Length: 261
Image (cartoon, rainbow, N blue to C red; front, side, top):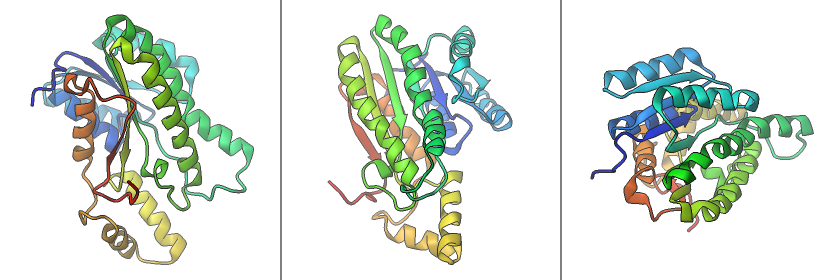
């Protein structure tokens, strides 16, 4: 299927991680110019080289996206290298596992600043150009915990759910301007984050990590963890011209894991 996004410019936040890098590569294969932003400069360079090897025009910006004071200057640098942002993929790291009760206010504030404020702030900075050009895609990666809260991931469940309300509201505000706004929800996708969570659960429950993975796999109807590339392909479709009538949606990529309708 021709997705119609050749020569569009995409910015992938968290572009050095498992999901972010897979999304960047998928968009690059569709002919997008791709900018990557991540705090991890070494991993960012690796992903940028992979993009260049596949023939994608790429630019890597080392950026702690929680620091909004540099957002405007970093975006100016990115657009000078690859052009105005047509597709924004909001992808942030997750907080540590914890219960939702008894968390100090400073911890809530720090994680809100890392997970929510950058998404809202950076989107606002690129949205004006999208609306002026009558075309844009804002895609936010969340977690299955926004649909079915995950035990011991209290901060993630709560803060990522904030982004659902924001995304749905924004979708209505900009729909007439040719900009779509959607959320993608991963289930158990085989990334470093999932390996970390499985290891933490194994420690917490006193089980071998292999047992934790086997139990997790048994809860997934397709009986396996998803691949980052499978997730990235859904994001690429939502970024496409073919998905122009899909907005304000929450799209699950979970192998049937989430039990609710």
